[in-house]
Length: 429
Image (cartoon, rainbow, N blue to C red; front, side, top):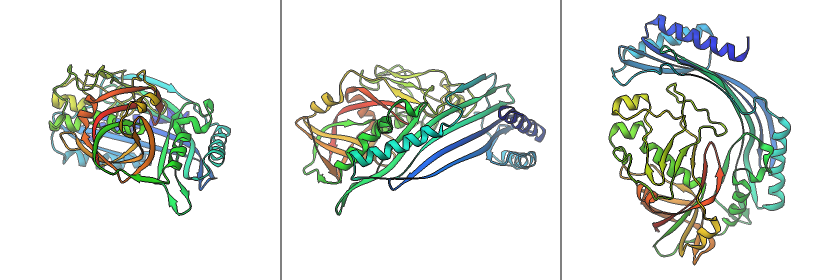
C-alpha cells in the first residue's frame, strides 16, 4: 500500500473507532513527515541524516464537550487505547456550543519537491561556509542546517470532509555571532523555506549573507546617549513581529475575550494607506489547510490601510458571530511599496535600522517596550554604528498608522514575504 493509502486507512480506522466509542462528531488527521538534513556546527559540516515520523491528531465531541490528542504510535492497538481515554476526557470537559468539526470540505493538494536532493543540500552548506570564510571571517556559524521536508497527510471528519495530499520544501537556517579579539557581537539568526535551494547562492537566500555582514559590524557597539523621538526602519525580521501581533488581534483568543483592538473595525482604516497584508498560502512550507479542517482560500486582511476581515476559526466564528475565515496559521505577505531601502534610510533624520525586537507580549492596548537587536543608529540619513542597550517604546496599533514608507525590496522567510517598513514617532531610550 502506498504512503497515501496507509494514511487514509489510519485516519479512517481512527474515525470509525471514535464513532464506535460514542463520539457524535470527530476529526482524524494522519500525517507522515520525512526529513533529510545536513547540519553544520562551528563552521564545519557535521551530520547528514534522514528520519521519518508519523503523527495522528484526533479531536472528538460528545454532548457539546470536546477533547483532542496526538499520538506517534499509529498502530490499531495504540489508537484504540487513546480513543478510549479521549472519550473519558471529553465526557469530563465543559460543554461549549462553539465546538464543531468541519463538514463538506473536499480537496487534494500536491506541491513542492517530494524527494530530497542531497547534492543541493551539500552545495548549500558548502556555499554558506565558503562565503563566511571569504567574506565574513569574523563571523562564526555556530549551528544550522540545510534540509528537505516532505509531509503527506490525510484528514477526515464525521461531517464528510476529506482533505489529503503532500507538501515538500527545502529549509536553510543558521545561528551565529562575530568576534574580534575579546569583543563579540550578540547572537544573530535567520533562515526560511524555499522550493529550490539552487535558485540562488546560499548566502542570498533569506538575507543570510547580509545578516553575517551586519553581525560583524555589531562587534563594536555604541550606547544611544540621550533619549529622543525618531524614525525606525524595520527590517523584515522585525516586521514579522508586527504581522504576528496583528494576526493575533484578529484571531480567536483576542476576539472571544473582547480584547481585540480591531474586532469592531472591519471596513475602517487601521493602518497607513501604504499597508496591505494578504495571505500567502501557496508559500513554500505552507499548506492551505486550517487546523480545524478547512481549505484556506486566498484572503486580503488589510487593503490600503483598511481592515477587510477578522480571522476567526470555526469555533471563533460560532462564539463571536463573525464570518469564519480559515487560515493555515502561517503564510503572510505585505505588498511591497516603491521606495528603495537606501532612500528610506536617507529620509531618517534621527532613528535606527532595526533587525530584531526582543520583548514580551504587548499590553492589551498595544503598548510595547522592546530592546532592539541587530540594530544601527541613523543620523542625518546615514547609517552609523551598531547600537547597544537601546530600547524603543510605542504602541503597535499606532505603528500601523505611522508607516511612512514601504520598500520595494522584499525578503522571504518561513512562509512569509515581507518588505522593510519605515515608521515615524517611536521613543528611543
